Image (cartoon, rainbow over all chains, first blue to last red; front, side, top):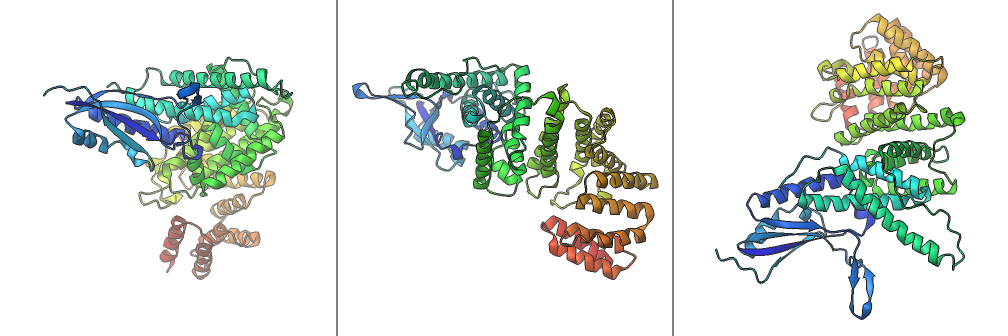
Amino acid sequence: MDEFILFFRLDIITKEKQPSPEQLQVYMKQYQDWIAGIAEQNKFLGGKGLSTEGKVMKSKGVITDGPFAELKESIAGFIMVQAKDFDEAVALTKSCPMLNGEGNSVEIRKVSGVHNQE
Amino acid sequence: MQNNELIPHLFRTEYRKIVSVLCKHFGFDQIEIAEDIASETFLVAAQTWGIEGNPPNPSAWLHFVAKNKAKNYLRRTALFKNKISPQLKLAPSHIPNDEIDLSPQNINDSQLQMMFSVCHPSIAVEAQIGLSLRILCGFGIEEIADAFLTNKETINKRLFRAKEKLREEKINIEMPDAAIIDDRLSAVLRTIYLLFNEGYYSHSQNQTLRKDLCVEAMRLCTMLIENTLTNRPQVNALLSLMCFHASRFDARFNDNGELILYEEQDENLWNADLISKGGYFLRCASEGTAVSKYHLEAGIAFWNTQKADTKEKWENMLQLYNRLLQIEYSPVAALNRTYALSKANGKRQAIVEAESLNLSGNQFYYALLGELYTEIDNEKAIENLNKAISLARTDAIKQSIQKKIDKLK
């Protein structure tokens, strides 16, 4: 089993694209159901949502407000799962409700340095 | 992972509470800031709770996050106002203190005050309803567009212009003085009435949304009743009439989305609880001497909850309509009165009066004539019903009229 981290990218900047409170509540439920699906397979390792504010620090003491306002795909949150391999991680991600939104994406990376021998 | 079910509409409910309090705090000219803070709070909630499960007290969590975001915003603007703008010689218009009060009392007060501000006579009526839906009811732009059968851009423009107007007029978020409250109350009640109407008669296909509109209208009216300053007879009358009408909500449409006419509705689907609530509020409304149009409409709505076709029912409705038309004429009331007349005094008399109404161009006028001529002069009935179909705008209505024509042939 390996550890994988999933970054959820959405447009959290463009005002007109933001869902209504009612829609958000629906999305949240869908999201919870999906996470529960992973958890019951004993593959969920935790995760966090991220604030809409942020800061970006660069070299030469430059600090700007995040989160990367130019990108329409800001990282909204991440979770970590354990899976046999990339294929399995992808399979788990296929039913992520965020993918129903146009322009949304989930980036899957393997966490290096963790190898549990099966 | 622990997941308790969230109460339905939690986000929407909390949205209006947070926006109202923040608006009162920042001032109405900063309403967009209030809306942004509320929206961001829900975004964070959706992500965090989605992953970590619901917090033990969701409302408190939302309020806490909203408060912090507001504080951060204030700190940033205070920095600008205190350090930078004096240098620029700009007078700060309004420097609020840091503490955001989200106590239940302040939440209620803010929402009531917001109601009066939004239903201000200086902005167009549909803008009042749109703004009420957005700020007081927490609806999204798309939901409002769907309710009005228009698109997002139109609604955005409408809301934008309304907010601009309120800014121009320098409307503050506060309760009007006791002296003018009755006056301003009539604007608020009319908006609530129209909001309910929107849900009840809307042509939007979205059934859930339409019921939500009716529920929201009733909720706003209830808020007025719960506050001693605004708990007037006419407010109780309005709530009473909404309860009576809403009691038939589930019986009005079949599974195919077709309108089911009153005579054909399944009485078992009528909500008895709402009917008795309507009765309760009607009794509460029977104080004092003033009779508002809401009193009369509530009386009429009451009789509509009694399905039996008695002389008493139609006599009473006729009298109520007669008085209603004296207070406020409307084509709909005139048509309904004529129908009540036909039931109380017979079709022939009603036909005479109906022909003199001359409401050409009104689909319901021809539908009524069609109904009245049925079995008296079937040819004229069919003629009128066909005119009604040509003016009808939704398939549901066209179908129900067509059914009547088919029965006559």
